[in-house]
Image (cartoon, rainbow, N blue to C red; front, side):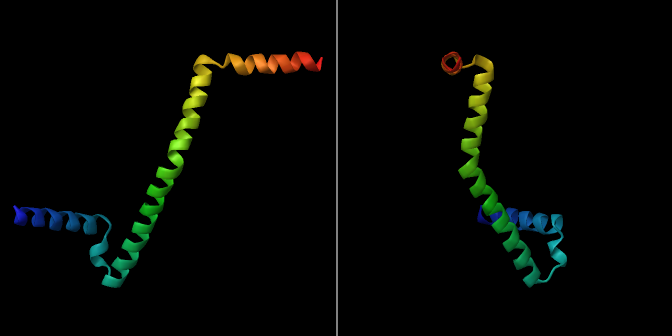
Length: 85
C-alpha cells in the first residue's frame, strides 16, 4: 500500500513538472517558481476566505431586494419626501 502511494505521488510530481515545464529548470529556479506559486495561491486563498463571504452576502441581499423589495425603506423614503414639501 505504501509503495502504491509513493508511486502515485511520484506520478503527480512528474505531471506537475511536465505541465509547467519545470523539468528543464535548475533546482534554484524551481525553488523560486514554486515559492512564487505558493505565495500567490496563499494570498488568493486568504483573500477568498476573508472577502468572499461579505461579497456573497452583499450580492444576495441585493438579489433579495430586487426579488422582494423592501417596503420599510420605501415608506421611509416617501415619508422624508413628503416632510420636505
